[in-house]
Length: 357
Ligand SMILES: [Cu+2]
Image (tube, rainbow, N blue to C red; front, top):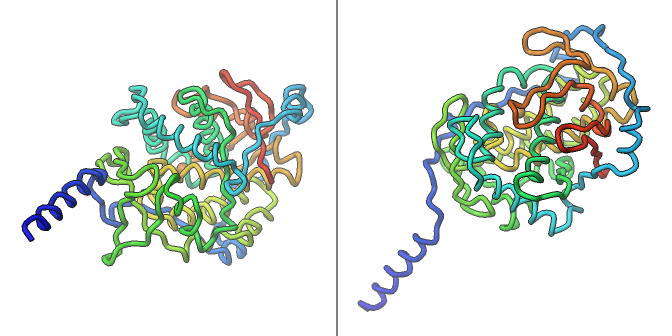
């Protein structure tokens, strides 16, 4: 009997040693959320986009030699279901590598190269959300991260993208979450309605030092799925947004529609409008949003050479407006990145990618 007790004590001690140490789990109320409108509201035009429709700036780019060269050999982002296992594992390992690299020092209190990206996003928060700069800025932010995976961690495969329309209402069953090699599980809230620390998957026990909101309080990577919200990441809603004819209107619907519902649906750290890149699933969600943007552009070549809408300060966006990622990559004019296949040289890399479908 005594030896059994001893054995049990030993086993629980061993288990405790194996479990990751987890930073404090913040309550649901600690995380600000994204605001959203329903699909019906967008169909009724209740987002009231008032951006002046007169700021289109024609910019001939498609016929450029750089774009032609890019078309011959673009980087193709592959949907997660078709993304090879070796690429999946390489992508996860590269994110972990970024988390293990020292911070640049330009983004205190970031503790890693990875958190530099979360801190930049937090710092820029009011400028890059709730206005048409959102889509184009996040396109460049995602690409800058993709290039950092190459430069810092030697991961040269194209990013995966996530076709959320195939998982709408059922995110938690995606093997991104159920397979322990990947992003860790996607639990619902606990009995008190609070999020749950993620202690499975490649990021088990991760401590986030950026956020929540504009504060920086160490907390565990947590999630609290609401599948009634993820259900709004469906193809009908995307279609509602992509049927809009001008950039600023489409942007409003995408940002306040499927984009916001995906963040809030995954919940907790992902619902933090400031520091959501702290959850690595952020990149998968934003690949979906950038994909939908590109699909909207495919309808008309003019959609890769013109832009409209006003930024956070009420200044009209033009193709010459500068997109800034705080030195994580070069400053670029929108004209360099409005077309994902511009073929423009940006720093050491060529801006040249498309989506597998
Ligand atoms: Cu964002």
